[in-house]
Image (cartoon, rainbow, N blue to C red):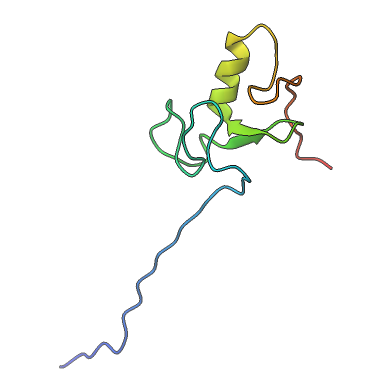
Length: 87
């Protein structure tokens, strides 16, 4: 029996975070990658936004806030509050 394959489908997929900035302002790593604490990019290290619209890796901003007495955005120095998903 002879089998002929007429076409081969190569499937490629890609994902990226919907972030206006290319990299985290704290660790300077790309959002499509992961922060220095993580080994694998994905849902374990998502970008988070402040009300000032600056975005950082979740682990990076949490370390920043825990290390600093003043709870300020590292970029604009405004009071840091997480932006809620609710509108």
